[in-house]
Length: 85
Image (cartoon, rainbow, N blue to C red; front, side, top):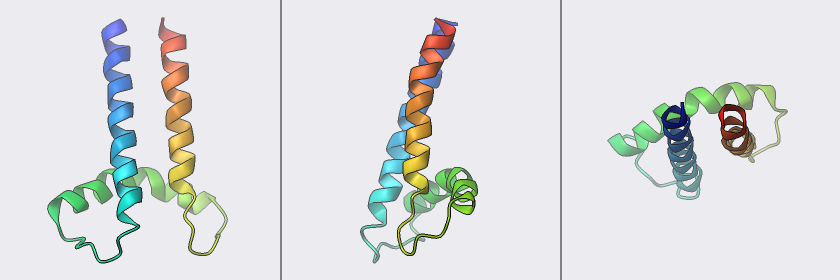
């Protein structure tokens, strides 16, 4: 069970890094989105961000969905070990 928790926490941490990379890419509007690496970042994060973006009210040009996802991931990284250990 400890191995499962460690693997799950590692996956959550990697996902945070992928999400951070996507957020940082928004600062560079001239980035070629047809690049396979950038397309991968969008493909892996969009299924999580889209439902949250749809639930949040429109705030103009600022997208708060990554902040919500980061908060949820942070809560999970605290709750999961406490639950299984």
